Length: 377
Ligand code: NDP
Image 1 (cartoon, protein in one colour):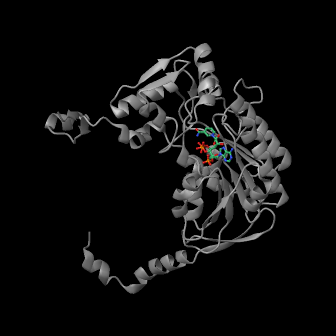
Image 2 (tube, protein in one colour; image 1 turned 30 degrees about the vertical axis):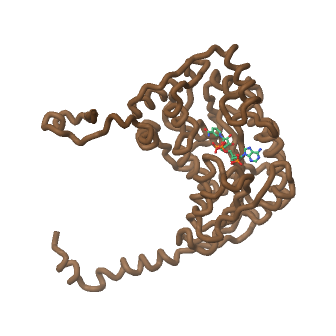
């Protein structure tokens, strides 16, 4: 308002505090004492800082994995990434500065490789999980025995913190093997390492999800329950943020967190939202459970790429349940994002190319604030 000349002519004392504030921020550092008494030099200089925690992230090569590796590495932590397949982990290399993301080849049945991955760390995250049984690992191997082996290594090397990602609706009496094994897995890790933080995310959406992408991508989506299952979808970035916060807040040790979004949807309601965003109609074929469940079991065994499994069909008949005694995003002071505010962002790649959005073309369009879709040809 006063013009650049006046700002420049202000006496130096008026401008000096800003300069010193910027300078001090660059040097901001702190020594934190971990739960077991280890001093950690934390710095706020970004991904090139020297210092910070060392974290191991099992299951980093999956969907959620990148959102926690990325957050840790960009704040200057050293991240150990145990991996199985060369190509699956390479996108994580650039998440941190040179030497900050360290890859270790491992096998879930090889205890020595698990111990090697955790022994230098201050925190271990276990994100390993599978929606369907594979040729070499059934759900029990992954969710119970694998989790047990990781918890034993964590306890053996007295790692400060262990965060175990389970699932929403985990229940030992569930008709679904996935939810059952997740519940037994929680019990196993808590009995080995009682300070384990358990995280139960709701179905997650994001760039690489298996929710919006599945609904938008498949022309014929086979379901058994008329898409009536209800849940609170949660943004993967919010879950990543919560996982990072757990590192900095030792009060989260021994706690259980249910992380879910603000709104309850049925799968059919989400499918409707997806169809609206992509301006296409996707067909959903309902096959009765008594036919589709055995067929899905055969497909899961016969094919070597994931199509469906009997347990996935079973899960369509189970609504998400929330344990009200568990902590939530609110306890971490995070406001979870709303699916309908982000669906355009994640689905624009699927939009029909026959339409495009234009700004209002006439006075009437402007007045009515309507979004018109203009057909190209
Ligand atoms: P993904 O399926 O995308 O990733 C799973 C990870 O586990 C991958 O890194 C995979 O490694 C690893 N993994 C699976 N089986 C084995 C095995 N036998 N040995 C070694 N590693 C294995 O899962 P998400 O990122 O979507 O989910 C993370 C966690 O959250 C999982 O535990 C999941 O069960 C849970 N969860 C996810 C929900 C969702 O909506 N996505 C909802 C509720 C819970 P590799 O790349 O080598 O295959």
